[in-house]
Image (cartoon, rainbow, N blue to C red; front, side):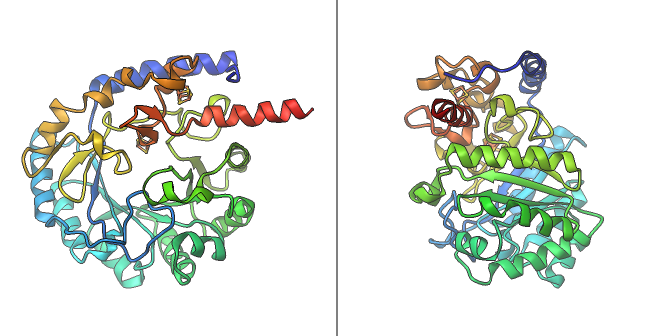
Length: 366
Ligand code: SF4
Ligand code: SF4
């Protein structure tokens, strides 16, 4: 039995639903991920893409620039923000030349990195080529971060990179932290560390059970850890020392409105597209490859965006299994697409149910 949403929350979610419907109909392309490589200098335990194990053959950056020229020809100045991911994008030596070319076209661009290769010279070279946004992953204090990242030097290098980025006033910078049972007790200390480094934005995620993470059961958090994370964020938000948010991937029941700057909205295929390492076109890079919509080697990204993406924009197909009888389906639509097992059309994780199960257990012990 799911916890009943309070009246105020239901009203706010209904109004937000109207906004979501409009956004879905408009489906403006606002974010475009480029999975620039599957190669990585790490082999993290939780990697959703199994990176760092095989040698990935990467696309030449010019192919992506060509696609972005076509996007600009159609969208004019309403250009999406480009987010370069991997693997580890800084392994590529041509990120700067790519960044310079797309900056000249008018695009803003950013990178998601583990920070290991982001020394003073590389940081300046990236900002000199138009970098406008940066996300660095920090997954705990030294031992737990290095454990998850599978690299004993990672923490120190990551902190140096965070230190560099936090001092720069011209880029939008945030730190991303994956919560595990191993680092949940460290949240206060990580908070103090980041506030001390003058980091302005911090996003906390739980690890999706996909890729290598799907094989590590110890990374699969339980409801109690999720609730502690959400309560931590809720309290930290009140302190207003750092803009803290829970990641986008889950409808959170009565926590909606308290732990993110906006209500839950999976924008995959509505405002978000991606070009994957082999040219395939999809939405967020962590979504099942079974939802791939085309490939830039055969068709242009903007044509695919304008004519495809039906399963992203009409989610009625997600009303299966436990979602059929769910009274919050209209707000959640079967959870984030990255949390759907597409082959079996079922949700892999229901945040709302995890939260409610903990409450039921607590109540039954009273
Ligand atoms: S697919 Fe997942 S990561 Fe992407 S927008 Fe939806 S919830 Fe967020
Ligand atoms: S994932 Fe399904 S069951 Fe869970 S809240 Fe969303 S719609 Fe309901």
